[in-house]
Length: 263
Length: 304
Image (cartoon, rainbow over all chains, first blue to last red; front, side):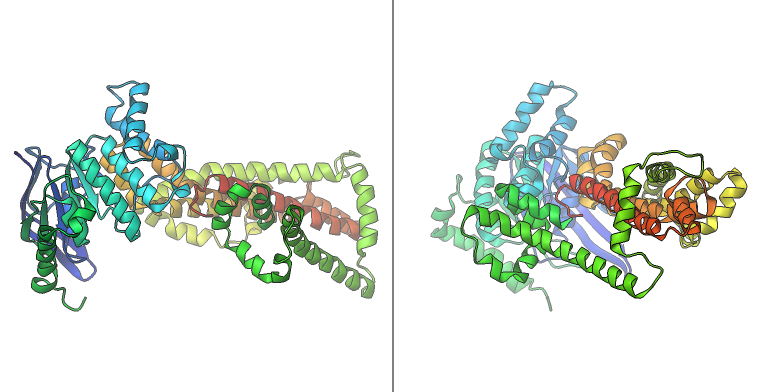
């Protein structure tokens, strides 16, 4: 499979009140088409910064970031982002939020009926057809996040970027959404980059897990290939020795090799 | 405000959940009357009890006000009591729209004239203040440029502007409109600017990812996001404008509730002054309530 997203020697610093803070140094990462890659690491290790560079929301200070063979120049709908706190516009309904994205991406080529069909399909994909006319404050946190995912998927992005998409949800809702995401990803063959701090989530969903060292000047520590067969089933994996092997490999990296000092 | 929310939760049981979310005071008021709560068995009682809880406390407060007023009026000679004021009010409101020359018109005309001035002055202030607020909020340079000017002019007492208005416009009515304008423009500028600065970065990131045009960013993100702040500014401004008009009209004369108060003072008709106080309060209350309703309509669950 071809290289799709490529980071070569990427570095990023921020100016803070205490002076210059080097968040990332020399990050090298290649993501293939159709691959699900998780970025995992302790908080503050710059994993969200990596995602934001791929999204184009941040410019790297050093190195090159490529998507589809072209240098990433600013954000764009071909790299859709699912934000941690859903970021739905409160004055638009669930449908309206998706329509805003769909209209922008496909509005010039397709007629109203086609756009409407796309929005409805996206809502159906995340099982939210019934909440189409509800406003974000009228639905639960899990539903908001599903709308956020539907909005991103409706743009038919080349890469779906997810920044701790389930971080703000309770454990049961999170598990449900992970299962849904497994199905959606298997059905759509989407290329996904997900930032997470949840080891189980990373192993369950990913083809590869990118483990990051602690900041400042964080970089890619190890990359773990997760060769579990798909479709993956949460209950079946609970007793699977390979699953536990991957899980302890990630835990070992996080808590033995790179335990965050005094955190 | 509280009363409206309570009634809403009574009328439509299905919506009571969202209503409660926006109003922590409801649960608080429940705790204050624990004895009434246990008795609700029949549907009639369940409807009645909250209604009583809503209506009784404000009525008690108003009754207390009238009582204090009556006691003070009894002990001090000149002040008319509630009863004589009520009699006078009945006569006054029997014919609120008479005209006997320019200095003797019905109380209705006076109120309408004052409202007209407030409307024009406040409208001009909104026309200037809201766009100015957007500019100040969007561009840090402009904001830094005008910050000292605003800080200098904002604390000035509204009436200090009156002589300037009289000098420039050479007429009473435009001068009081000018005073309304200059005193009500600041809350709108400052609140709008604060609202623009408070637009969540996440919403702007959504716009960036979608590559929305500047126009689309304004109409779909900036404007709805800032609207609750604008409405807060409008509410404060209307309050200030209505406060100021009475004082301005006392000084400039003409037809208006402020002039009317001064005129009745010269006639030593103290009942009418007390009635005027109630009218001014009531109109201010109504203006405020209308804007609170508007603000709630456009708050989109973000809380006002």
